[in-house]
Length: 298
Image: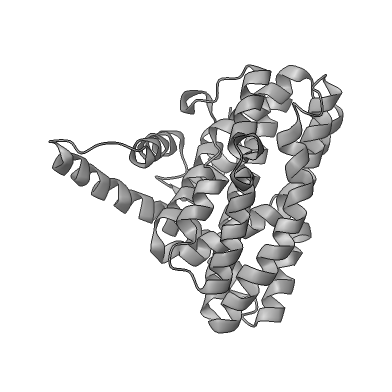
């Protein structure tokens, strides 16, 4: 099943935009981020991690090279950059993809299950990405990421946490979101988001990437929620998507005002980094949508 993304990767001769690399990187991310204990062979693990970090860095640099020219054209003053950034909602890569109206109006339950399985397996954990990104940020952006994280954590109540809502939907739809069942494009998206959040040299890239998720997700989430309810899920069962269809609109407004604007006003160089991060996220998302359509539409 060849997709345009696969063809593009082959044309470039990329060693990173391919199935084997993305699966290996996904397994490594799962293992290294899992809480553990000291071991006697920690040096062997460390040596492996150094090798993987070099590969991860090269992978992310390839994604940066893909968007560098477009990102360099983004304004670097606060007002101009916010206008450019918010314009990505209409004009960014992958926006208005025909997959989502189809999911809302036509996809059957099994097709929606497959879509959700891909999304759940490729979910890097927005709450954890925010937590890792906020380390040592300036005060205003840090506070905004803290507020966003607190919402993700259900304001301290388990029933309000977004992660368990996703887990509950996995159970309702009886899917098995594992790396082995996931298209590499979905893994690539999660791997890119994890790389930006865990490496401090890409911290501002991560701010841009997370911000563009909040900006662009509500419309897609609303259509997926429509599809889930159309095939018989209750509003409570579809809550993960209905919640993000509404809450992320406010999150985006707050993120742009409190995290992005003051950060760029303080240092215009951050605008280019955030533009690169946002475009990396959107281009990875566009590859996912194409792969999903290739599978679902044959």
